[in-house]
Length: 164
Image (spheres, rainbow, N blue to C red):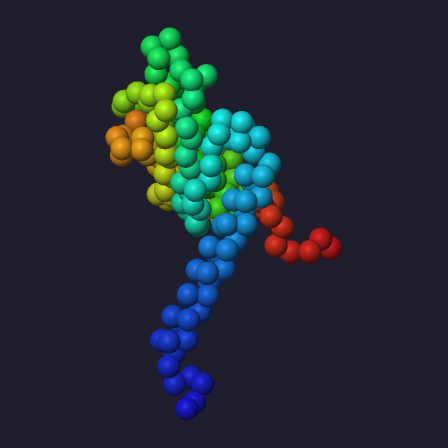
């Protein structure tokens, strides 16, 4: 059988290989970033899943995170959403920073809750991206909605080429 007999199969195999490499690179970038991310670590966050344009992180609500109403301080909810945003927008292994964001708090987080932030890329064009992050508790109750705008800067999270 001739090598070019099934171009559709060749294209599908190439696409699968590209997706596999992109996923592996996203995981490498996530692991490298998390190893350096002292803030997320100090708050007890975990990086639960990462793939190109997506990250899921979780954080337990500890007693020292409660405000005067005995609910999770909004700053900690923001920090979780912002961290998930950072991992999602850096998942392409290109250094990317936040350019702006908004957050809407919809329900309180409570002590002993485990909050989960899921960040999903909505648009990526040139050096700019838009990401939506949903923060929910362990019961699936929506706690906050965050939208982040990213800006790509120079460099890679993990080097993919040897220095010259």
